[in-house]
Length: 274
Ligand code: LIP
Image (cartoon, rainbow, N blue to C red; front, side, top):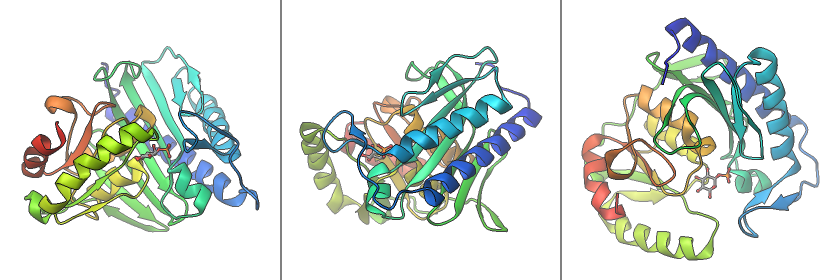
């Protein structure tokens, strides 16, 4: 995997921020008054709205205009190969159910990655942004550049929480859209609940990872994520000094993504079959 030079990495972060911000503005300003479900995917509760599609179309156009030689992949079908060695991974609305219900925990996630995003463990994020348009929070990072949160004109460097034991950790997680998968995931979280401070299920992996980076949660884990759910949040967390792992201690990915202090992840791993 060829890592771009630091100047290029900073430029990639700036582009990710611009694209995620403009898509966030679109899904806010142009949300129809009677927003409904356009179609469903893996199950009747895995929903897509017209704004998911419009957001991804806008991201695709802006990214291609800026860097036509890059690849791009998105949750709603965007799939173009590139020649530059950099690919973009876009979740046009992460937390679509929250967006549909107007719960203010959804985000546009845009990440630049290197490697083969189609193969778990064969890619890694190098720049990215996660924008929650409902709160105005703009989380962003590039490899080696630290992680930051912007709200309006205020910019802060992200610092993870000091929690170093599972018992004192507020742990985020999420669930799949298939009933049988959720049944098994529910059993795991039921066994975990008495062994940590508490559980939070916010509904957006991108924001969950950014909240760990920001110290608003102490740890997070989830199985079944797609690259677009977690690519940008992975980098924001890692650049904030958070340990981000996958199954068996490998790279984060669909099988398992977990984030937190190393000591907390060491305690969490056997409880979730990591
Ligand atoms: C969401 C993920 C979240 C998961 C939800 C959903 P989507 O992505 O970010 O972590 O628990 O079930 O999959 O579908 O809103 O883009």
